[in-house]
Amino acid sequence: MAATQRIAAGAALAAACATALAGCSSDTTGSKEGAHGGKEAAGAPAPKSAVRLIGDGSTAFTGAQPHLPRPVRLKPGQKPPQFVVFSWDGAGEDSQKLFSHFRKVAKANKATMTYFLSGVYLLPEDKRDLYRPPEHSPGTSEIGFNDEQGIKDTVTQLRGAWLEGNEIGTHFNGHFCGSGGGVGEWSVAEWKSEIAQAKSFVKSWKTNAGLKKASSLPFDYDKELIGARTPCLEGQKNFMKAARQLGFRYDTSGVNNQVWPKKKQGLWDLSMQLVPFPGHSYEQLTMDYNFMINQSGTKTQGDPDKQEFWGDQMRDGLLKGFDRAYNGNRAPLVIGNHFESWNGGNYMRAVDEVVESVCTRSEVRCVSFRQLADWLDAQDPATLDRLRGLKVGEAPRQGWASFLSGRPAPAPKGVPGAPAVKP
Image 1 (cartoon, rainbow, N blue to C red):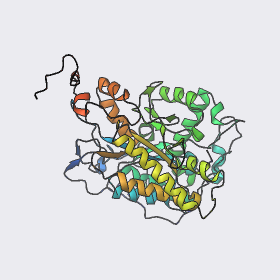
Image 2 (image 1 turned 90 degrees about the vertical axis):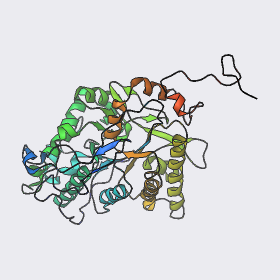
Image 3 (image 1 turned 45 degrees about the vertical axis):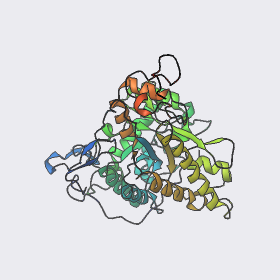
Image 4 (image 1 turned 180 degrees about the vertical axis):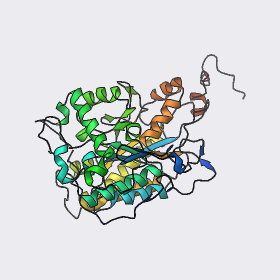
């Protein structure tokens, strides 16, 4: 997987929460239908007295996250909602303004997402030596570092995203892939070092960037950070060992089929999935980079005459995967992307169109990984076991009410023990 391009300086965005950190959300009165299918107590801004600065004030405790729905356990016989998770690797705001764009798209379509922040996007170039990457020289990064304006813009987006109910995860720091010190070769101890540094850059961005008067991020990152995706989907085994010991709750660094998730090494395995690839006999991973590799190779800007078609191909593949789950086993659909304008920006267009097509449908919940993990934790383990027994695209033959009723399914008509059929 190619490294995300170095963040470029973007135009300054209006600063959110310039005074009271927790007083920036709107539409916070009453209650509404939650993303998990139950009544959500609408997130209200934390009172000013609840704000507690952490460390140098780069982060702060501001109370419970607004707009975070309460997970609801399925009732016997209730069909599960169709969850869809849109996630972003190396999330940061640059001159393309894709972070701010997808915040608007999500909000307009009743969706929340997961943003996997690269820690070095909050570390200025002149402080690069503060980063000590495992198996590499200090100050080394495959995706560079940032400048003051880029840090300001990224923090503005992180702040607003969290206040809207989105999740801030991590994509770690230097994005080292392949042999010669890549993340796939790191030990558990080296992963712990990388995780600690990713947290440190978030918890000390004000000091490192010389922005002491800026508004804090409105969360405690030690508590907010519960999951990640590794660079290039490498190093998952040792990362998961480190993550479990550090209290993480999920990982999304593998490749799965469209079936219900289970725990792996004590973490929910919420990896991306294989979906149909229109025009091909094989399936494709639900990520823009992988579509690009199978369309234009390593050229991030391939044949201009094919770029729109390639975007349509990605969109249609994701929608086929969605339909297969929605009409079948209802397994959560996990999608991963980058804030990049590869092949003319057509993959970003494809994501726009998928969000707009699916997130407002009946029984669909476009959620963050945190929200999905919360919902899974709230379910009866026996119910999840039954759901995992369904194959890709397989709907229960006896219907959802019987399948998840908690009672033995009725015998099919015409077999011994079945009720007699009146003529």
